[in-house]
Image (cartoon, rainbow over all chains, first blue to last red; front, side):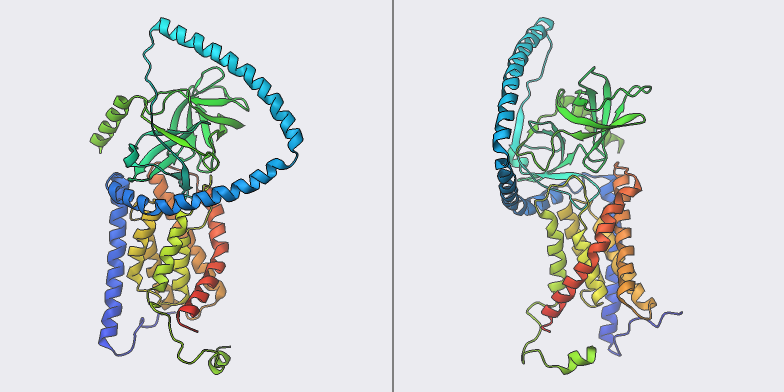
Length: 294
Length: 174
């Protein structure tokens, strides 16, 4: 069926030209969009300042409302805690006794460790927290896994810094505005973390799967070194993430690796900390050579 | 139905379009984009792309909601709020408007199911573009990951279309 002669708004020249120019503008918009997209794919840093301003513009809404959702969520979990409280109380007391014993053991080990390190004259970086804040939002309608963090350049946060919480590693900063920043979570596909298994220390690579879990692959091909329940920690290789931060716990094995769930769940952690890159010099060198390559 | 609506005088005399009725569709698209600033921390990106849903719902409801080229600045706003690489929504949204212009010329009649199919195809194209761009940026996910969010978007389109039609009636004072 041949199309009819197109939308004619009657005999008015003005209306006809209006339609035509609207079409030309739409074509121009499409071309501009494609060019901008190509530019942001080739040189992702081009629009850093614009994106930072946009982050700051929406951050107050996000942070303000986060308090409301956290309170509402807290009411429900808080009410749930009263359910079966006596049993829970007894269980918590038992766990506390166990924990106290463990803490004493750990203190002894850490003291021994520092003595051994002093004996070996190991040079170690003092770990410094740049800023702490809260995870206030996320990219919940995109295949990428980003989170919005409530601290920005005004607090000293810079692109590339690692972010962690008390429970474990969260990710690294990829955009920063003055008041807030965007974090690439470890569960994003583009997020690759050099790691090792806590039990045995075998080096592995952790890569996100985009659905809140991570893929673990051993560096040495051969047998599958993982067991269910294994904890994976950062190895410090590459110089970005500091070593010994817990990353994830193995939940399922597959043919040559494992699938693990991050220990720090961005939706339930209360505070996160931005730290300096472990080896700033190594990271800067890498960034410099990447820029040269482009 | 149409005739009865025209005959029955339910509208109060003197009631017309609300102030700024011309810009209300565009503003509603921007507000829908702003839903992404809601403090929801989710471990999977299965929520629908609200801005795009409202945009195509308006365009399918009526061809004069806003000129086709307005999709470009609206897309820029969406990119900035969502944290997409700049230009993704600009290109996809403008292309969607032009495709729907083409569909207007090619189709002889329109119905509920045909509009839903158009919307589903556009949502698929949007998700696929997002997936492809993520792949180019170093996040090469398997294609099946776009299926759950796509199904959720397609199923939520009728709700958004209903909401937009109510908004249209309110804006024109009907």
